[in-house]
Image 1 (cartoon, rainbow, N blue to C red):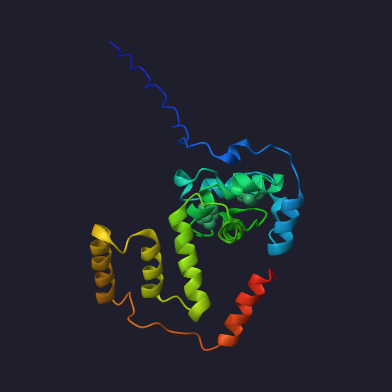
Image 2 (image 1 turned 120 degrees about the vertical axis):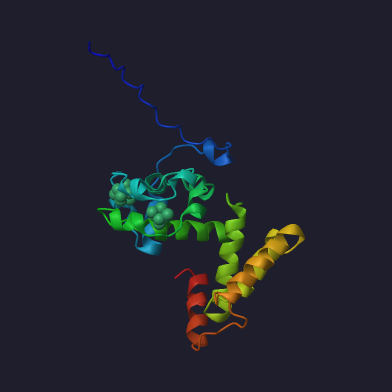
Length: 211
Ligand code: SF4
Ligand code: SF4
């Protein structure tokens, strides 16, 4: 006698995680190419070449933590929805791993676009969706501007002082981690400077001037 085997019910994909509503959600959809042209002019990234194939998003290793998928970031930039982009956590979650760029058939430089958007938030008055990542971003750039190289001790001191990690129980855990890194030769005691200080100053001056 043949036994009837019933097929297992198909599992539905999990819905995307909900995020709290922000002011950017109310941003009216009035497509405007001015922002796209500005980004293309400032960075050389060909946002207009994107045709929405989603290869970038399908290869991105951190979409689980993003509120916008990488292809959506490009689409919003095409539409000029700047406030939604600035309010997004995605620009801070991006790990700059370059996977999306290598997969994109149109060579849309998404990691560079994420950096550009991060910088517009860092320079403006808009609060960042990931405040601690913005503090880290500033601490990192502060080190580069000062020495031309990142001194991990100095960078972490700046970061921990601003985020509260230098005090209380977190301070002990961070000190232990620092000691372990030092023992493995991953943390230097003294900073190093780049020799070409004039070049370094010129780079940051040009950046401030927006060139
Ligand atoms: S892979 Fe490139 S063309 Fe495709 S959606 Fe992403 S950015 Fe656009
Ligand atoms: S660079 Fe950023 S957006 Fe692109 S695949 Fe890596 S994490 Fe994702």
